[in-house]
Image (cartoon, rainbow, N blue to C red; front, side, top):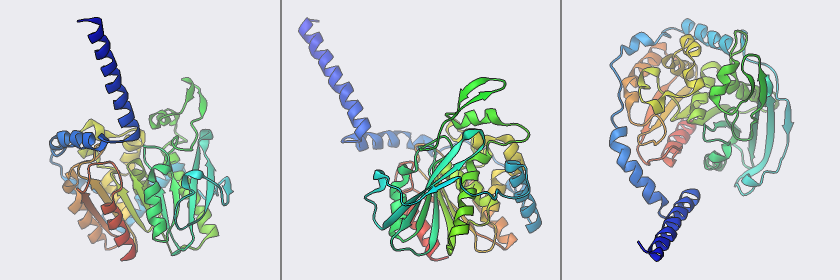
Length: 370
């Protein structure tokens, strides 16, 4: 091959490589076309997740009000080694802050920044979005592993458009939350960067899983003391959907809760991509209450409701309709308890890991027609 052909080939390769980086980084044409082709290629595989037949009823342990209350109390003790939810207030609240990322949002009067400091110097920073026109109802929005709750800006805007106040959270170690360095007595200095690192902190007197639900509990203490909302509801995506389920299971101040692509029972997690990290698979936690019990707890109570929404073609997690294995069993159990509501919806309107317009329609319809 002549030098001129080698040079031309090299230049062509560089152009293709650079174009690929630009297309992926800025999601310009033909990003959506290529993404759609990729999803179409994997759709058939994703429709056929592997799972095995189970006696679902034998895995549901909450069949009367006393067992519901007992298991809820056990969970609270598991998280905090005490009989009640934390009662403290946030460490700091800053009013009417400036954050240019949200400066163009509509029906937004102000943003309050809530900071909560927890064990091992792990913190949580949440924003309370106060609407200009308010219906006096609050939505807790919880982002997942993708990072900062800024990723859920469109969802936050949707609820502001509908006159809800929105209290937005990121998961521990993500978003604006810190990633502290600690000196571990057995393993030396470690920077906590992933949720799996949190497992290293587990001792008899402390469960790191509490770090996921403690921030919204404490923030709600502040809200309850300083506001008088007619209802408090919660929406979460992915890991935030998991947090939504878990918080609703232990904190009855949550009225309606909506978990999008948030969790499956362990017996449906044969696909490695669905198995989950530390908080999703902590055996001590799920021996206290398995996922079917948690769904029951999140649903149970007067005027309470728990709804799961799964993306049929989700490229990340919990795709398909495997939930049909347990859906009717939980609905029947809640019906027999005669208190609460549970349901699941399948979103086949897109091929992304997100809260779609279809999902938001389900949520707002439930909130407005309770």
